[in-house]
Length: 103
Image 1 (cartoon, rainbow, N blue to C red):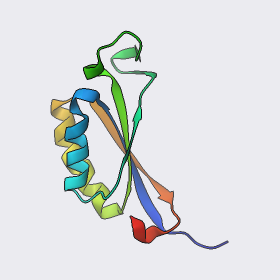
Image 2: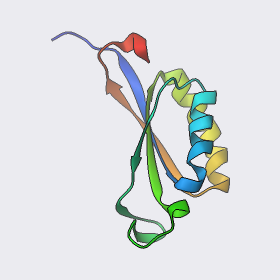
Image 3: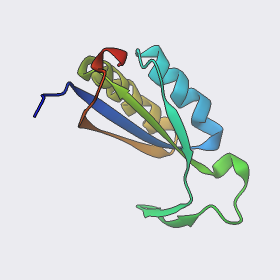
């Protein structure tokens, strides 16, 4: 088996109203790309939530980015401050990638 480069995948879950702020934070820390996915429903410390019947501003979005470990540390450090002010969460984990030079 060929060894593959290891990178960090960051996933932030934020309300739509704060999506651009999170994207700017990630890019400002060096993330060169990202993907945004709509959140449909879930459950957390504030209870169950569903996209049905909510205003667009409070819809949840998932922002995915694959970055170097150094970039992930910068994002997580800044996100700690971000999430003191805005609702949501962020987490990171290691992933194997093909074409590691792209991240």
